[in-house]
Length: 100
Figure 1 (spheres, one colour):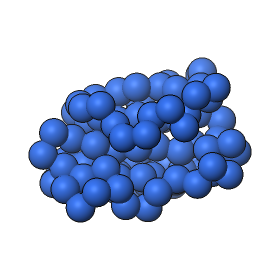
Figure 2 (cartoon, rainbow, N blue to C red):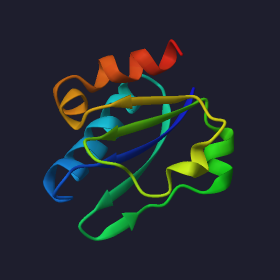
Figure 3 (cartoon, rainbow, N blue to C red):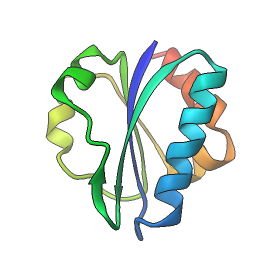
């Protein structure tokens, strides 16, 4: 399974990057290929390419705010969760993505 994800929190500092790290760790444990874009205080980092998005089975948006450039995911399966959900149980979040 291939997932692309965007993480973003209101301040764009710690939780954005903590969620990205948790998703990567959980994906490795679950044999899921994941690319994570962060939208934080430094702007967009590790931007997802059009090819990444097209190849993904699911787009995971882990955010408590509106993300930038959401329109590029039009036509994709999208699963939205809060940053807290990712930080407390990233494996469960990825399992839900598998069921979409």
